[in-house]
Length: 382
Image 1 (cartoon, rainbow, N blue to C red):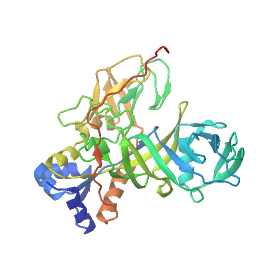
Image 2: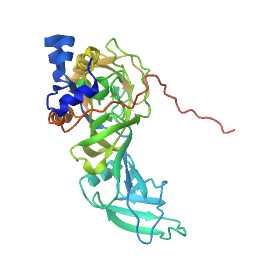
Image 3: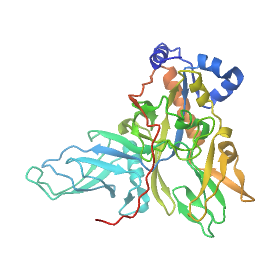
């Protein structure tokens, strides 16, 4: 057994042994779980993919005379202003009033991170203490007050692959899906994915310090649609949608390499977010979880047209091969998330820890290990 405090002492002295979630797999094969757990202190993970449930809070500061912002756009993208006078929230999937799907909230956030000027337009009904009724100006990360990313649902723990059973192409948040099972898209970093390396949330919880968008961030709560009660394999890995995390970090410190606005053709806007979470190897069991390989992580296939259901699962070794056999035919597979960038994030986090620039934080409280997901039913008003 090792404690996080003991591991942090080794990090501060530059003596911690840190490996990525890909590297630990081979080490565990060669040395076994027990010896590997004794030698390794931290395993770093990484993922970089579309995370639609993302956004940012921005405090613009007060104008003179001041305004209580009621209706706001940033680069013509609507932002939510139902907070205090000059607190705004821009959601990643909100669309431009002028450009539609070509530009959305995710692009605004990327442009903000890049240091570009963002056009701010706001209207108000006016009050005695906030008499201004309209304002047009520009803001950027150097002249606003606080600006922080707050994402209600990121880093999904095993996301189903997507296919299309209909006779026409459909356009979805899982990308363009060709007719008659023409392709299968998936969006998980597999053996590098953070929550797949800690399937029961033994070390990842509220308060965990993480890599977020190229800066230091934190797990702030369980993510929306957190569903840990999914069926799991013998290795503890859920075989479908399970845990999620809400995350936060200083938007001003982030990098456009790990925060990228995106447009899904004929679907809408999103934001690609880079997340890396360090896993402290507190015991042999934790090492075993981090040594999970793509061949042992299975995910289901979902028909995004809603017409069919399947009892079919593939592992990530199969999906990453480029094709699988599905319903008697060879079907091409493609990732929406970037394996190259996920590896880069895990390696960067490893470097931060090895150079004593990042220490681990123990969770203030664990993520829920039991929960359920409700559906929205049409109910009559009483």
